Length: 219
Image 1 (tube, rainbow, N blue to C red):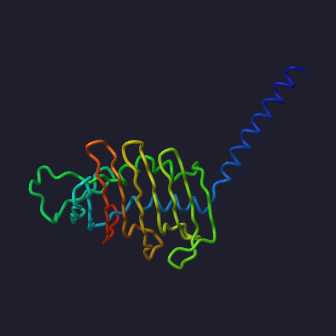
Image 2 (image 1 turned 60 degrees about the vertical axis):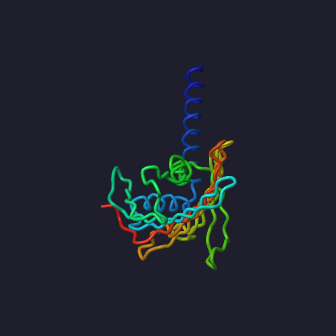
Image 3 (image 1 turned 90 degrees about the vertical axis):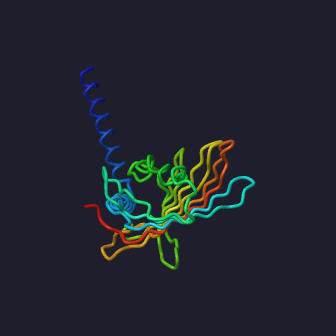
């Protein structure tokens, strides 16, 4: 009798476990799966040319505008590397030229958590972006809030907004606009970053605009 109860309990547990896994798999929005695939495919491409306009404003100081042009120089460990072609106005001491705070680099480590089949995603249909019908996905975790507008059929990204904040350190947002090539692959067209660095004695606000052209596939 005890053995019968044990077998019944094990079968019930196993059935519940398998049922839960099947339900979880079925719960993944097919369109969200396409969005994940599109985002992963973007990583296999890189813009050959990037033009960056940086406006930096320190407390009490006039704003400074810098124009930077970069060009793809190669790939290393599946990551695109760039060479700086020009900086306008030229820095007085190139050796001490500091690199602007990059919100995209800060977002990169948690991107896999956001673009995941396990992410908790809110879907809103019937949205419009630039006169085109789109679907909006929203994903939030402890580190970022992300909104992604996508094509309702292919999942091609149309626009992405990332908002991040670190108490007493920084807050900012990154808006990326996309274009879709002839094959249906979405690629970033431009991006705008707004950052407020709150670290004592290093307080500064950045507005950074990036324009991406001449996309090329990773060899």
